[in-house]
Image (tube, rainbow, N blue to C red; front, side, top):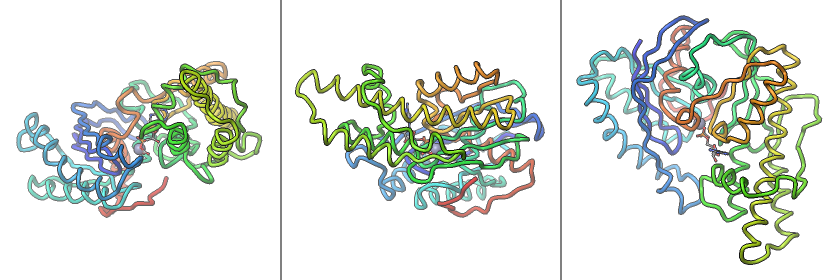
Length: 341
Ligand code: KG4
Ligand code: ZN
């Protein structure tokens, strides 16, 4: 099944063409086109995503990116199905993609499938990982809106065993970035700055690390950074940069420490043969390196999406739509802002 997929849940307008083959135990994906138009520069002055601006930009970008797709697939030749993110995400932004998908489905007489953004993140490593995934697996999904651990006995079924009780880890990175005066989106900026800092400079708390469950809490960690900055005034000049880098590195270490330790504990408890990482924060090399090292130490295979498939993209939506199609599960083609796993 060749899928033209569309993603507009937040601030990236994305279209992709993915050839999906295989069954539920061994699905295989070949990305033929993966186009993303980022709205970062539009939202940056506001320090975060403005839903109505996102909607306006999606409306502008969708036809432009679709035109590019048509150059390669005139009349959507060879495309079997259109698929689109129905949630979770910003409602006005989701509707732009859904309406566009229905429109081209109508014009070109193609069926339209819904896709779940979180499942997309869960399966995005399969876009570049070609071997069969060894099961059972434990998955860590880390994005701007979600942080969760899943236990998977099959690739197509999972059980959520823990999630954040307040802020998502990506949100914590973004908020700490703002406290440090770094531009939106803050995650990559914190990572960049942290490279120049001493990760042991400040001992930030590891929220819920010792709790026996697999839940997280990142709001307290962000507040600890806020109080630290309030109580330790920034020096001036070059020293300020060093101090900020120390805070960034110490915060990143605390956040990653909790994510890695809880994931490894889940892998151990459930006898996981694979740890799967997904979501925008999976772009963070410090997290990837630590999780990879610890997985290796525990004798567990570690898989993570290739660069461009970490942050929001449309290719990952095709994985969700295809697997649901095989499962005979259908998402309604309406915006489902709070859709979960
Ligand atoms: O998955 P994603 O692109 O969008 C959502 O579904 O939320 O994730 C975006 C989040 C943002 O919070 C962003 O700051 C974070 O992922 N992020 C990072 C990095 N790259 C993106 N966080 C830490 N380090 C990074 N390198
Ligand atoms: Zn996402």
